[in-house]
Image (cartoon, rainbow, N blue to C red; front, side, top):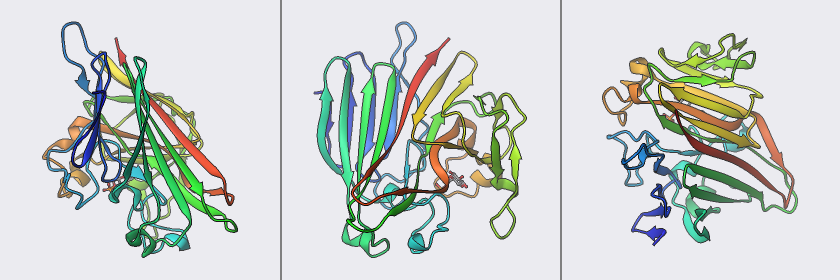
Length: 294
Ligand code: BG6
């Protein structure tokens, strides 16, 4: 069975051995195994904190949470009742259908529309569809945001919060050189900070890092000795690089001890300013994660 529906999750299984697992809660991809060396099993590519709660009581600390419709604490008046990173990562999605199931790939579609709990804090007309496709060496995630209103625009931010499993003291992310970014570790009390220009050809996360790059290249290499993950995106102009290190990570109840040494978050999104969708239209943001073995 290439698509297994379990109680609270969906498992995708590729004929060549790759697997992916999604919780219906938050449509959170919590595991992606792909890319094996000779005679070994496909390796896990996403970090999931051993203290992450998977019971639907809190957004998952790890995997690929979906950020929508606001990134960080809400700044848009229509988002004022939402919590950090919005509601998509902490609502239960529906498994809508299996989109593809062949030797090339396995793909499922999950959906989320206004439920009473969402309407209570976000009374806007929208529909979300999330398509996750597993291929032998890659995982694609596509978020479709439809403005179902017949009269009003829909302004939102969206982001894929990828926790890439990687040795944080060795991993490098590029190309980000010469791109303008906001260093949130230096934010003022008002939450504002001045833009900087990235001078490094390879960005590391050996210290607490929380940087929002604006209008980036949309294609990133996340590399450490011997292997890595390439991320190609479309419709997602910005990218956030985040690692809390012990400075911020040790204060997170659901972060395992030393967990910050095991990942880098490389998060493609539209998070500087707001994207507007006209009534009846759909916006699509896509990423393709590929395993790189050297
Ligand atoms: C990143 C933000 O995307 O997510 C950080 O830039 C934030 O500021 C981090 O701390 C984790 O957020 P949360 O809500 O999952 O703890």
